[in-house]
Image 1 (spheres, rainbow, N blue to C red):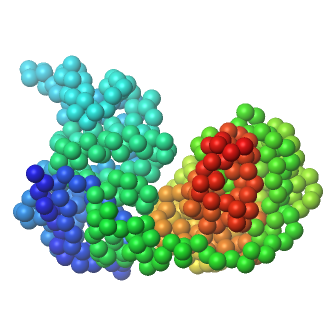
Image 2: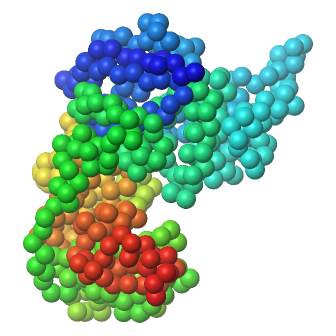
Length: 501
């Protein structure tokens, strides 16, 4: 029997300084349902989840669990009330085993020897949790460091479930997972629903929400827009609820007049990753690149930027052959590269916003070996304003920004370097729909100014919406070079899967 409104919040307010994070928010969720919470960056999703998990206290409002008013002054209080949260950043200890991580802080000991761990009982209890959730093929004695990201995510959730919570909060659970491993996660979550657990699922990936959720709550600017059954809403309506725009308004209209060729490749090869790739890119053009995982699409971008220089073939910049041997050479030639993993390759997370934006442009901010701090601040502040990067101080560490604003910092870095060619690899990965629209507008402005943009994405609608032409990669080879007018989702997938040759 499903308990209606097992979790309720009424009139929740939360303010951080001069920013109102949540305003008079009320909502409810039931046991035995997967309840998605969606909204743009800054909509209040994470603040709400932090309140429900006891990480922060609301300024006003009430929380009810099983029709009883409760106070959650700490995660310990929340845990006692049956609420556990799994955040984006794992809290696992890599050198410990699966069993040790699942039962961390609750390892069984021998009664007469409280400092001696009962390993037999530990392993049996940890295995029972995995068995209950239908997880197979994992040896609970395996060290976590040897697991795939998907299995680490499962261990993180199992760890939360060791205390048998009635409410499990999953904050962007798929953010670190490749798409091919989502099935494992979703199967796991559905098992929890069958066990009458309430799963609060926060995600910016709308296609996942439509696949997994029973109901969807939409937040905008800290306020409730509405809660709707998944079956009663389509993606267009949900996007309009989130950002006040329809799907048709997301991709900017563009004058598709182009200039002369700025970049081209002939017979480009990259070891075993891609072979015989030829294409051209004009000034003022967005050239989309689509392909399945392992198709070689990202390897082509790395070769053009000199991260993994091509093993064969030729590259031309404005008609002149260009031999790229390193990223430094590519940067000097005016080529910029936004990688698909911004935290690992695009940013120095503990450095300031100012220093991250300046990294590729220090020469234009210096007099000889002396950095002109005043000029640096002026140039950085101008890009922060131009790209609407939401921060109160450019001296703040870049890690304090949301994912979407971090992505805009990377774009600002390359725009300040006066690049002529921009290689974008999954430029909207990990950001919500509102920031996606902002990034699309930035790209639109750049091509108006004559930049050539190579736009790599695994989202077909995004490639179709942004590109003037589209290259399709299939198992390391160029399968198609399509004009936008002749491209469709069906055709892109057929070429990418090798159904059309």
